[in-house]
Image 1 (cartoon, rainbow, N blue to C red):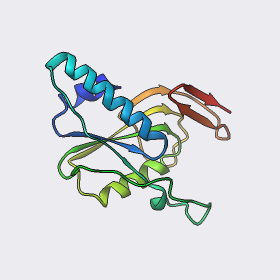
Image 2 (cartoon, rainbow, N blue to C red):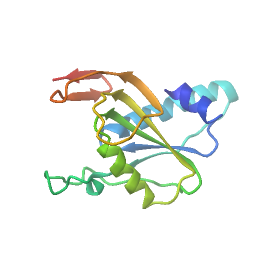
Image 3 (cartoon, rainbow, N blue to C red):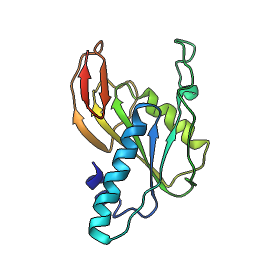
Length: 155
C-alpha cells in the first residue's frame, strides 16, 4: 500500500496520513515509516506527516449504542489544501469513515481525501470505497474481524 500511495500521488509533496482512532493509528504510523524507507532509498530524503483523528463523537449511531471517545485527535499539521490519506484497519459498513470525514472537516479543507484500509470486509451501508486495500476478506455480517500488527483474527 505504501508504494501505491507514493505512485498515485506522484511522491509525497502535499500528502499526509491520518489514522482513525484506534485501529487505524498504528497502521498509519507503519505506512508512514514504510513510505519514508522507500523514499529515502530512492531520493535520499523523505518525510510524511502522520496524525490521528477520533471520530467517535461524529458517529450517526450515538443514540443507538453507547459511544465514548476513544482518544484525542492529533493533527499537528495544517490539512488545508493537502491530500489526506485516511487510514483504518478494517472497512465494514463505512460509518466510521463517514464520521472521520466529518471530524477532518472541523480541522480544515483538504484538497482531496483518499482512503487506505488493511482489510475490506464488504457489507457497506454507505457509498464508500477505499482507494488502497491490503486485502479483501469476505465475511458474514455477524463475524468480527480484529487486526493487529501480528495478524488478522476472525471470530
